[in-house]
Length: 195
Length: 199
Length: 192
Image (cartoon, rainbow over all chains, first blue to last red; front, top):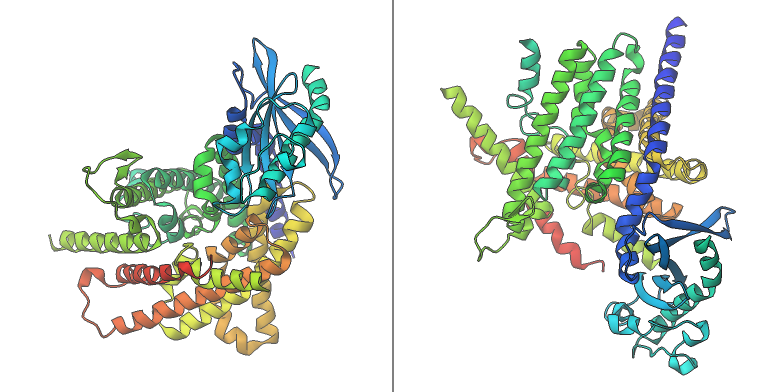
């Protein structure tokens, strides 16, 4: 009996010690780990769609409350702010469309402080290689530059200013939709950024 | 004297995984380049040394019947620490090593050293044992990684080392190359030992 | 249905757990000298891997994710697997002595077989559903058995072959496994 008690006590103590150390390490490394994921996963797209800046936009992040997801957890959107002389000059954030040919299309949209698009990068998609995947091409993405009104960010067939890639209309439309969504969100974003 | 002996045995006489054929999975999987082998070796060394330290400290407290469970908790804790720290500070390496970081926990070398050495010896020799075995393991992994990288991609630590018209033998950085290369190195080690004995 | 078939073939042949993913190598070389032991080990691996993946999936989905304890995954999984193996051993010994006789001695070895933990972690990383996790775990361990039994068949023949002294044992085992892996690379075109 004494043996049994000793076993339980020792094991419990070891587990408790381990839990303590681990939760501390988890807390201590949390911000740094999130920063690394941002830097290597989203970083290249963020840098690509922003103009000139002299800060680290990956560290100047404003979080915007996007409401709750279907599991009741709060969803936040990260706004990466580019600054010059400590003043915001442009910002980048992600936008998603589910209207693609297969699965979600994730784009990073860069906007200046007036809400004009200054760059678009396609981050993740699962469109057909060689067809839908052509939305990654610079020529297509550059069409968005300078647009400001969500109504313009549609395919030319639907009264907008974007020419679809031939053979990849669905994917083109999905990217346009994602960019338009980002523009619709802009009024809220700029308020938070300028705070 | 004996501490030095515990340290050096891991470097040649019992160098894992060439002499002590244990913990092969990471050896085969991550040695596609010298840098990855080095990173994996250092991560394993960290876990080995600290697991040996803690287990040696607790060796008189842990009841024999539950010792394996206790060892696993201690080892797994250090593995999680390595996992978190690597993710925070060495993200590209963390991505390359991927699933093999959590799998350090089932690397038989670590549990093997805990059971065979740290649970029966005092703290200082246990640390020496862990450090020696860890460095031996790191050297082996780096060596195997270097061989595979040179033949398979024509580079060493990312720098081109072969002549210009060299065609990389790309199967060496894939699975078959891992097995064949390790097998041949083991044969080479056998050959060297036999020669030493004859002398 | 097609999706599951693809997953099955992918896990057995294309991404064979030993020959392409490098998991579970220690027992792969350790027990691949006799066909009986290899078969027993394979059966034990199939059994434990499938069971462990199911349990760890439940643990991850209903405990670790909701409470944001993902960082404890490694330690939680290995403890669950170790406990599970112990329970299975006790259960078999009491209830199915025949099976215990053939699998029993392999069970303690399985805790440190990284294939079991590896498959459990891979299922979570690939964000498989519960059914997919089961199919993936089962197929992966069948792939394990296939590779193990194939290698054993070859190594049994070494007994009567004239082999250079230095290559005997693990060394030639590894080289043979390499050639087997080369052959398995031919399956790469099957699931794309």
